[in-house]
Length: 203
Image (cartoon, rainbow, N blue to C red):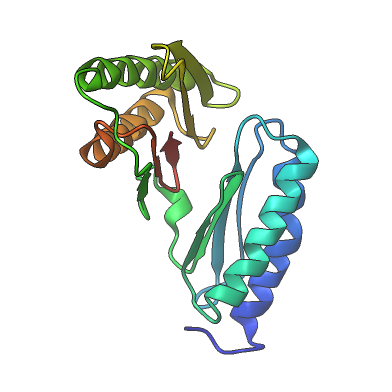
């Protein structure tokens, strides 16, 4: 924990005014930075979903900072995930690494029915692999979406993958490969699922 009204909190407040603006002004809706000196230095990273506009991105990151300080009051290391953006700040220099941590897996409670489950899983796997490859090769955004027709009851399957744009193509592909494998342990046969980490996410 940190002390109320101390230097660490002041540094979070400073980042909460600069990071939303930096992310929304960025062409890839991404920002990272640090403020202060040890032991009160704060590192922060935020990424908005690749199809958001600048205004929605800035609003989401601002809300994430506000909620982080209310829901996780006085915590030095906080991660907030939303549909439109995510935010992490910490006294540990996580932005210097390309490793993914703080991973959360979510899944739809509805299963695909037999006998189409194997075909559905195969279609999802092909779609995710295609979006992983595209996101890793997309040097501007490290973001990809795709869709695949399936059958009359599940007409279309939608997919999304995204990395923080400061990752290299190889690091992005590796991050997404790991997160998709982790997600698949919980979402195989499900009608939907997502896996979210600080460095990459898939849905």
